[in-house]
Length: 466
Image (tube, rainbow, N blue to C red; front, side, top):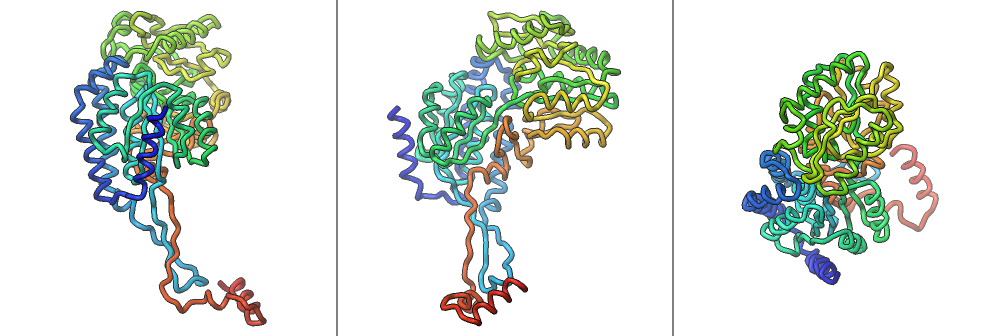
């Protein structure tokens, strides 16, 4: 692991050379140019690793990177500028401001499900904030990780940012190094280990974790619209999306129509027959055999406990493909309702009393995302107050992560801290507080020792009136 220490030391030696706004904007421009130069290789790599269609590579991997870079370059000078504060009467003769500064050396550990955007988006924030960065992409998407390494090497010098490849042992070793900040995207259990390791060096953390993200559908919802968006959100990247609608809570009086509509939407997107839906090239495959087997096991467990397969329910182990599957009659004792699915399986639970929604959602930790399909704004407001979540979509799914003006992140077991846009810049920055003397003639010297009757009178006056 000497190469890890060597990369860390090289960047540490360059910390004193803090890049200017112009230099940072140039780095970000170079990063996007490098992505464009490797466009065909990214498409091929993501097809090899995940079976991802070219269109999804452009829309869900490359375009969000472009949008994030454009947003950061547009606002960077304003983000970097000192922020003046008001001056209280007791401090007349001074001025105060907050100066954003780089945290220093940061580590970014990214996942396999969206390996481009979830690696490069935090890198954009880290570079915009002026940091030195080591990135560790996932070993589960090896071809894409190699291309990411080439992109970063082309965009910036290694003392600014560099990619290291390897497995969990490399990630574990990196987290022992004295970084000032660690950004991790992945599962909750690994996130706890990252946070524990960061505590050894008192490093701050940004954790983007997972969880079960519910979608609530009531009788006022536009069923055609709701079913189309939920079918798309559940099948995007074959369900391997941290903010995918994990399960649907549907009002009982519309549940049968909802199930039919979802089936129609799946057929529109991926073909009328089960075989077409299973083998459709517009869908990704499961990332590896263990993950494929785990998701298949969730379906089998649910069926064995009484769930009904309404759509799909077929799979092909040789291709690691699972047909879009919708389950009805799901209960909380089924594994599919106890762990994040991360696959193209939509369990449906029915409710009659709105309080049942709160009961089901609270059975799992706070979700990363929560979705509502309803025209009843008051009902949505009540559910939102009762069910905290990291992000929320109302009559939409997934889109909140693509809005650069919105911070993205979870709460408690679904994460901490925020990425993207200005919040991402702040996550990788220290807010340095500064007080500057504007006049030598101010009240402060009157408070210096030696103390006497006048000092006590002044102290009481300040306390009472200022």
